Length: 531
Image (spheres, rainbow, N blue to C red):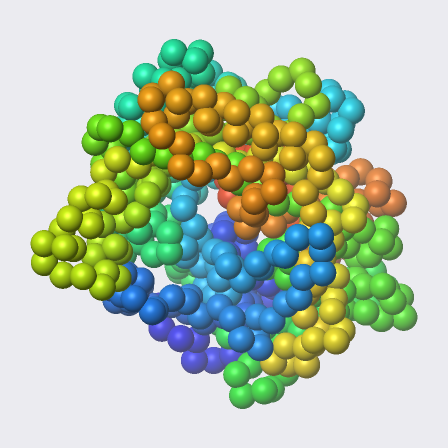
């Protein structure tokens, strides 16, 4: 994509979308294709698709990282919670958002995820249930081009086949299957937003194995696909245009005030505004948009903007086995198990992942090695081909004290306060991580593997799935947006993305983000036509 040459406002817009990640791009594409005038503003640049091979080359070379330009004053943040939160480790500001370097796993939330409080007395209930979102999940799978199979005995009911066939099990999947069968743990395929065969103008996956941080082939979905669709339908997409605040009256947003690289501020007026810049930046923008009517931040009459920040925690165990494992042959997961997910106890859900990328990559090891010749070959033989690992995502229940606020002592490149992340891991999540570790170690021991490492509750880290900071609900006193994702406090402000999740489950959130974005676009289309 070429850089946007004209960053002045459009004279007329039905919709201004803030953020060009999957949520914003899907909303923009669907509304532009429905005939509405759409403008998209994104804080970061356009990344040229033709540069992906060069980015892969840079990724493999020693001493080079930061392929997507994160860091510095523009992306400054602080973290004051119980645990350090490395916010920039997995963010991308730019056209495509974090789908530029995501791993691409896309599964539906289970039915229990929408009803945790009523079923188990923990967490919260969503104001919608799985049945409400089910048709939009099918739409989202088509939008992302999901490859999958209906072989998961724990998955919620579905009516439509996956758009693309599933990827076959890997070599190491077959090894794990033996142990899981012995332990009574059913395994199944992983839905992936990457092409198992040519689709949507892109090739099938060709096996670079570097899905994170870069897919040179274009087989993995990125939100750039929907940006192209939006522009083909007449939308304007303006890059390097960070929104500074939302100008508003008591009940409506009038304009998104954004800056351009030359320092000029502009006002993009629109009939409606969709915030789609993630669970942290959505909050930051609302808190920056204060007024006499909203002294604590826009859409914050409940006082909950920024609260209930959730992520998924990692649990894992790995080791070595005396048989070939072909580690790193596949760069994404092809087999997992939801056997620990649903149950009658109130523990958080756990999704087990059988990692195809366990242990060191021989390419990376060779490039970074200090030895040559036979010594290097001996080193590679010793470190490659015998590693196995079982990972897992563990649910984190919403906690009002986990939150995003503004740190007014630190400012970004425009002089605005930066986000501060307060994050902790509760006792129930710790218990679920320990349960996951017990099962993971049991699987490795069943295989006769030597367990080299375990990531438990004291060493867990986030999966960088930012959820819950503008939660949806029926009651304006206990939520930020209504079930249709429109702000309770303002007639024309909508919020897209995982910040509206009341609970996070233990499933990667992007498919649910896409499903809610399809649903939001349908409702906003109707809202615009009625006015």
